Image (cartoon, rainbow, N blue to C red):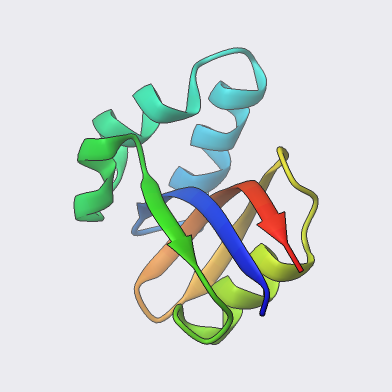
Amino acid sequence: MARATARHILVATEEACVALKSRIEAGEEFGEVARANSLCPSGNQGGRLGEFGPGQMVAEFDKVVFSGEVGKVLGPVKTQFGYHLIEVMSRKD
């Protein structure tokens, strides 16, 4: 069964998501940006979600984690919770 580890940043608007992605791409550390800005409790751990399998996250999130490029900041990804930036840390099939 496929497994992945990922971290994410959750914000309320697409604009905020795009702005944070620009900051990370300019060199700010993903975990620090997550701690300062994420609306998800995982922000306290730098956005880390631990290891999970397909179907454990909402569909839009799952699709990105299990098909997106590992190590790249992906998003904005819209879900029922808001807008996410996602970094897939590792993935095993």
